[in-house]
Length: 111
View 1 (cartoon, one colour):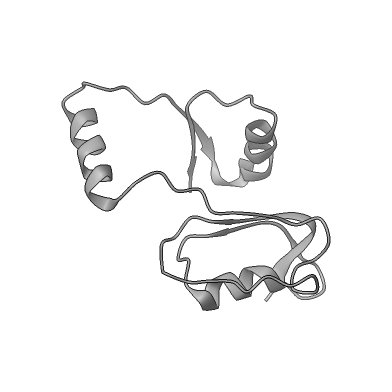
View 2 (cartoon, rainbow, N blue to C red):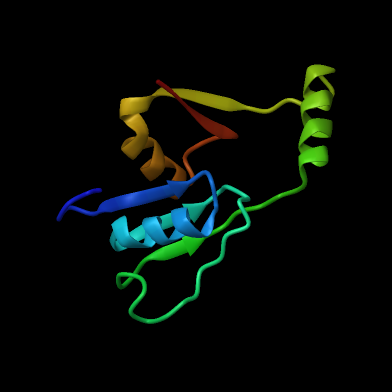
C-alpha cells in the first residue's frame, strides 16, 4: 500500500484485526500506530512484528452511551470543548504541535 516508503503516522479508525495488522505493515521505523477504532481486533506482539521504535497506542475513554451523554451536555452548552481547526494538508505540522503539547483542546483537520 505504501510501497517502499512507510508511513510515519498510522491512525486506525476501525480497530479490526485485519486493519491493525495492515497498520503494523505500513508504519515506519520510529513511527506511531494509534488504534482509535473499537472493532474488537487484537494484535499478537512479537519482536519481529513491528519496526524498531514504533509506538503503538489505543486511547479509549468510554462507551458509546457515554459519548452520547457528552454530546448531549455539549448541545446544552453545559460543557465547552476547545478546538483548533486546521486544513487537512497541515496534518503533519498539527501532529508535531500535538506531540509538543502546543494544542489547546482538540485539533480538527478539515478536508
